[in-house]
Length: 209
Image 1 (cartoon, rainbow, N blue to C red):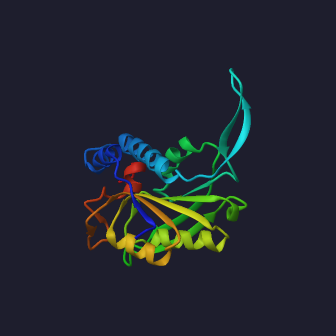
Image 2 (cartoon, helix red, strand yellow):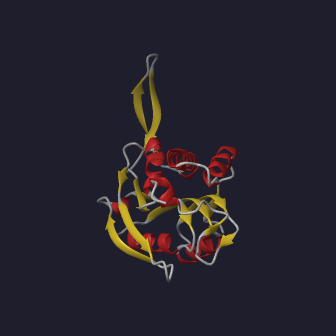
Image 3 (tube, helix red, strand yellow):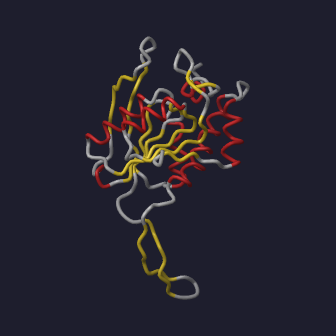
């Protein structure tokens, strides 16, 4: 799948292993999610557009590149996606932040949207959608649907861990959207949790398990 990028970096692999451990506490889990997000963001943002400007160094005048266009928008899928925002903002501190709220029906395992607030001029921005887990693909698919409805065109998605079922479902619906994945796991279990996964990422980020 040409729009899926599996980031095979030893630092990311190491940190994801720490993330998986049942013994990893809330504080460390939260820090790891942020660190992984920053490392993934470095890869995902390698094609940002630039323009040349003239500057003065202590030595001489020089023509050098700066980022071009409207500031990107980081859009976490609530609530677990909030844990990834800080890592992306460490790279793009001036980025705008939107929010998309989804909750999962425990019987049907289908996502239900309850909130969406995106920055203005979303059609002119790179939109970076973040969610630690890509399980069935329903939440991410619906989130990108909503962003497109509001005019978003240039969209990238970052998920730390994904199941094959979720990758397949998402890419079939949104073949034009670049998807960046830190680890592709084995499968979903009967409760639609990723195996081996990390458990409920939201609970582990916010200490509510």
